[in-house]
Length: 247
Image (cartoon, rainbow, N blue to C red; front, side, top):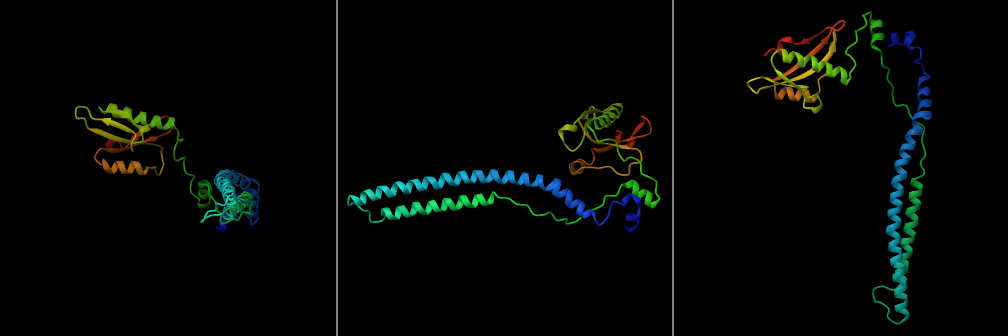
């Protein structure tokens, strides 16, 4: 690690980098985060405020009206045994107090404040070219072509052409997300071959296979084929492994 930090390319990695990260976070990250959180919180508080006011206001109105009814009955000498106007009025006042308290709580929840961000850790991403230079190894070639729909379609077209030359009837199933790219029918038997196509530049050390592709290959071990299109210099290419595509 000391050898890495001693290189001129790493001169920007100093003890001041933490303060630079904090400054960037305060100026660029925190305001956007606060705005996002405030938007969600204000929306939730608005809905809660409306629901609280609607429910408690209806109850307050009911007990206000009930208190007036009981007061009139008491004045007419028809006082109730279970509830009187004073109790009904106290209930209305209690509900009014609950309403004011809850609205004040919601107002307090809407007052958001931010704390200074804290740096919990960091990492250094090493370019593969720098590692190669430090270890004295040659720089690796590009691992793969641009991962675009166009290049993937070209890879499938190459494999489908090979399938046709071998006498099979291939169909492109890429966009159906089945766990393979090409479904190839064996003439006269109805049997299907399932091909997953990967395109790579010559010299690539690895290819990536998804979980879905692996699971499908395990379900169809005798009929699943991993076809690799290796691109050579110029416009040349070859399909690997050639024996696997044979009938």
